[in-house]
Length: 260
Length: 301
Image 1: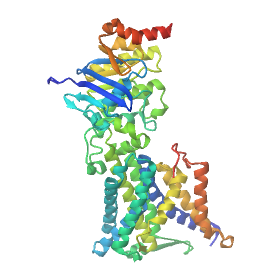
Image 2: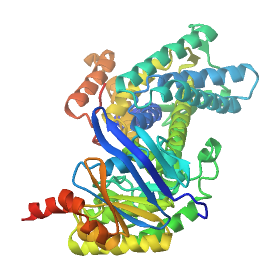
Image 3: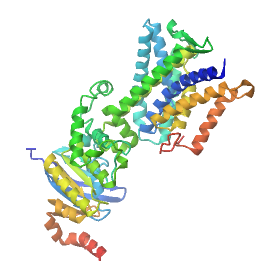
Image 4: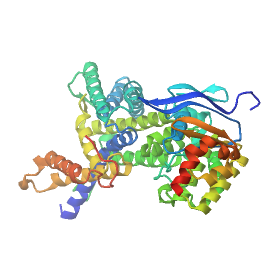
């Protein structure tokens, strides 16, 4: 962490699907422990950005670096093991697995194990350590009473928090949350905001949040980046972004009109 | 022989037959659940296990050790075919993977013919395995192979149940079976999970091959074909891709086959056993593709 490289840095990152450029010349720097927001109207390239960083999509051009190491185009599992965890729009839990198992499955295999270990030994050696870490996380997201329920049977808000716990279980340096507040009511959103702050403070992770909920973004994030049609049209502190005329025009203005 | 004794005898037969089907079907289901791969080469792992055991015996290895080594050989062949044949086509359309497995079947069976010729070979058994037991003054009888088939299948399935619930790789296996893409994205080492799945499926098939050969008394390169088809039927009527489904399907099919054969011979249904079984398969595919346990993913063949 004492090196000059930031935790995450993208440089001129571009992703095109055939003719459509979903993300263009994207550049961002995220330092360890920062809370970053990414906002923008639908189709602005936010999810594409997450998909490229997490390795789900390979970049068309440009670079993504984690602590100075190029990770653009690596396999998702590799990137996850290097320290980037994410959640998905609308959750993507293993619904047939229990709450505890969902967290354990992500805490496992951080260190690649060989076949003999996988089959015969070693499989329970890690288990104790994994379980205590998993229980701690489930406490944090207030699911400690539902350890053995199937994930699919939880209410929606609980599933959201479980997905965050699952992402944290791999001990990431960077946590990316894709619309974590979608479908939550205002008190749940407030609880989520406090949870994300707590996670940052307790686990020293940087967090990037994609969100449409402006209250959450403006209250939570230290820096915000605004995308529209794949381009970065503004960035800065919440105050700076709100004062940026381009942003107001492209995004806030549009939503005020929509609200009116 | 009264009806009670007759029924009891048929139950013994059904359980023995069903165990065998379940043991083979479970392997098919594990692989399908992870990769959507309909693995036709699975039956040939039976052949590999049986021939492996035979070769070891001929080399002078004691029987039990030979069986163990035969199973290890089928597990190794499972690892090799995953690495060189299935991994390159992982994620390809289902038909590509299916055709790859059919090609593998031909390659493995012809290798078997090349090495051992296509004529059946005697599968020597130690005397204690040929022993049979009688109850009710000999009106109910079973062999130690019947007992072993059930006992070893039970052990294998209990081990599998323990493995998927209590080990990290087993947990990864269940997660990957539900959502392979999400498994990659939460950092599960999917390659390890898949290789372990092939090791398990292939060693189960290898064990089944030894038991099958012990019952038949012979081994030959095509010996895996019939049990493979039956295991497919079992896996599909149970619910393809589900481990409990494969076990239930195996025992249901075993019971059905024994029932058909035990009906009065003047009804003449015995000769139509396979026709009835495959009609049942078609009925399930048409009306209940999720099988008895009702898996959500529909079967595509």
